[in-house]
Image 1 (tube, chains in turn brown, purple, orange):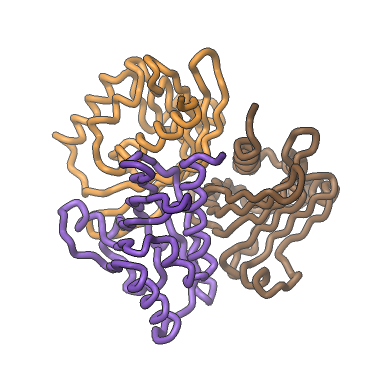
Image 2 (cartoon, rainbow over the protein chains, first blue to last red):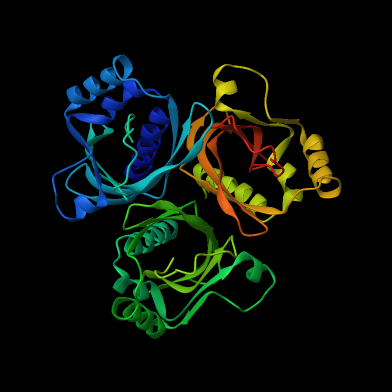
Length: 155
Length: 155
Length: 155
């Protein structure tokens, strides 16, 4: 029997790999149907400002966003490589956990240019539904407020 | 019952998060009362030179350093984001462990400039006192000898 | 009794530390006698192209390569610092595992210049022989095709 930590850590790695591999269609399915995804800066987060860089509420909005990226947006192709530090996991009710995970993302452009893109931390609420972990909330707190306007893929 | 590895890994993550969150007052408490904290370079460490970039012996010196930073020093505000690789843990006597952990720190300045600040490894001696892990020794071995003179926060 | 995950994770950390510490003589011993080591780019890997940046088949070729580096090659000394994200481990037959691990490597030159060198993922096949994990295959998939021609040390 695999314990909650192992399953949460595998889940976080799977999320990262799905994006790194450009399997974006799988992205909404990491969330509960009513899951919330928000990218914001440390500055706004610390000040309690509701303003974020990106906000999705519910899997439908996420699916729309992926479709828009696939169909409409024009941008230079690039790849991400997520690195995650150890997740700090705290129980938060039955089958629910608060999880904080520091991360960096390296971005590689099609011409081969590569560099540190963003750093920050995930602040997640993860629930187990039918035995599988899902994101009820993922706040992506970026360290820098100077973010390349080209945040196209989810982080 | 949580095992030693889990508690050590959570402890290392908590240390990193305390600094990343600018909760520096908590920093000395990660050490034993007589704990040693030293930042040095790989070059000096490999040559067995006692010269370091920073040396604190005992919680008192650490508390003084935090107070000096808070009260006296003038520097541009910045944030750290620690990323830790897997700690290699070896038992070293009863309730004591030698731990090596590779790390990188991304530094973000107030104006939003961000970049890789330092990389290296922690070489720790961790002891369990009253069931809680504490640093008896933390050697911070930086890869580069060209370190920005502005090492203000602990690493 | 230590479980397979713990032993695999320690093994991956040991591999990284051996290279970071310039203990290259130990490198071939992380592989089975017929082990395969290949560095390639994501672009070639995704296209199924057999072309790689470096290819070693069997411990003998690896030992030769280390000897050549030690005796013949002329290059500026440098150090690596590997950071590994969580390995995703899947059983693949008895005592065998497929493992994917995202990584970054920071390179520090002798003059102190440091920076992100490469990012990518390891795609490993690990087998347990006489109770010890060994690499039967290690594919090093680099994100960028623009790699500094000076890949001297194994990654």
